[in-house]
Structure formats: C-alpha cells, structure tokens
Length: 341
Image (cartoon, rainbow, N blue to C red; front, side, top):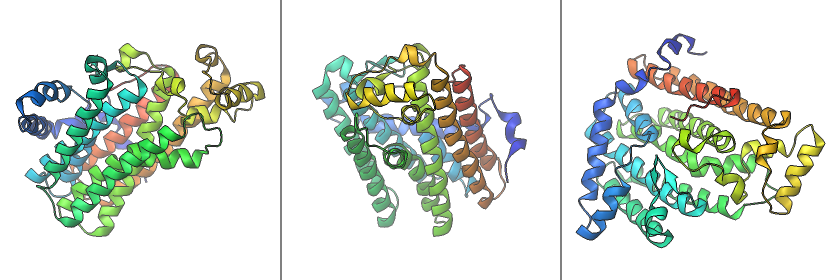
C-alpha cells in the first residue's frame, strides 16, 4: 500500500507544525544542558549548541510519540538527547573532513582548532549520556548505549575504508546503517519504547527508522557531489577529496561506459582525486545519481508501508509526509534543482 493522498501537504512543512511547540521545548532542554557545564566550558558550548539544525531526529521521535499515544516529558528529553548526540558526531565529522562551515556558521574546528573541537564533541556526547540516565528503564538505556556505540563504530569503519577499492555496496550500506541510520532507528523505536509498546511494534518502527536513515544518507552523498556550499549551508565535496566511497561513486565505478568506470577505479586505487567537474558533464554521472536515488526511493516506499501498523492520526500522516519530503529532495537532486532543508 502507499499514501498518495498525503501529497497535498508537500512543500508546506505541515508535518512539523504538529510538533512545533515540542521542538521548542527540545531546544530549551538542550540550552539547559549547557548551563550544567562549568563557566569556562559554557562559553564554547553556548556557541556549539545554538545552531538551528534541521532537527530531523528529534522530529521523528516526537512524531512517533504523537502517533503512538502522545508526547510525554520523557520524549522531550529523549529528543534533546538524540540531537546532542547528532551534534557531537557532526563536530567530529567536521574535524575529519576539515569542513569550515556547518549550518551557515563556522565549524568549531574552524573557530578553535581540531584539538579543542574534538574535546568539545566528546564533552557534548558525555552530557547526552548524562541526560539519558534520567529517562527510560534499563532496557531502554541499553538500547540507547548500543545505538551510540554503533554510531561511533560506523564512523571508525568509514574512516578506515577510505580509498578502499574492495568495498562493496553491501559494506557501504552496513557502514551507513551504523553511522547515520542508527539514530533515525533509535528515534522511532525509542519513542515507542517510552510509550511501553509491544516489542513487535518497536522493532517495526526501528526498521522504518533504519530505512529512512539510509535513504537520507544516500541523499547527502548525492548532495556532496552535486551541491553548492551556499545552498546547503555546509562545506561540500569533502567525501570525494577524502576518498569516501559513497553510493554514487560505487555506481560510477560500475558504469556501462568502461572509460568512466576505469577512470573512477583508477582514481580510487591510486588514492588521487576525481575530476569532478568533468564527471558531472557525463551521462554516467547522472545515471549514477539516478540509480542512487532509486535505491533511496525504494526504501522510502518500504518505510511508508510500516505506517499501516499505527492507528490513523494527524501524526501518522505527518510521518508519511516526512518520507514524501525526502522523495522530493532526492528527485530534485537528480533533476539538478537541489533542496537542502
């Protein structure tokens, strides 16, 4: 089954209006965590935590809560915890990628150097764990800790597989499942656990979150190859420069045009950069983008199927709209009209 009748809400971000007040509470909760640091650390953390991110993971958690019984105070704290973990991972990512801009602002490493940026990311992650001890039961906290470990493990695996010509698409998906999709999955399954729902529903929502997380990472991979820094609000093109073998690159290495495929494989094997400007003008490049988008779109469709397990409600409609929004972002990326928010 599908949800075509939800399409009328697209472009209007109606799916976020349901949780607008709750998202404000999440931001207030994050700000309150900053006040828990000593005054000297607060100076840095106030700048780190005041960026206006997309709040995708908190949004998923809050919409799932709303669709399964209503948003509780525990859900607000949980959503804040997810965003703090995500922010910590971005700080570390920007150090590794030598990125200078994130969310239209200088990154911590650009402002204060790599060493302090890494320490700030660690400190923020630790505070997120402190917040996590105040919500849920032992089983919930074990799941949250496992998700955090998987996130870190995925980042390690990605960093150790740079320029790895032996990487397969299956291995790519496993890395993405850990480093990106694990927090999407935790957002939905964790919200359900806090409602006390049965295990089969929790795992169903965990699967939906995983699918959406993988799809979102594929979009981000395409954006990195095709986007413009000013549109995206962050430094782009770092994946190619560092030798991250994203899905479009893997498809390019298998292109029907053997000259293009050989050029990409040779660049990977010899650890040298790609002539991205030239590749962008080839049919193989656009085919690789479309194949990547198709992989993501199929996951979005599968994710929508999971929603039939939830009772009909405005929040369920909003969750469906989230998947359609991601559809549009992928399609516009392939058409050359980027949506970066």
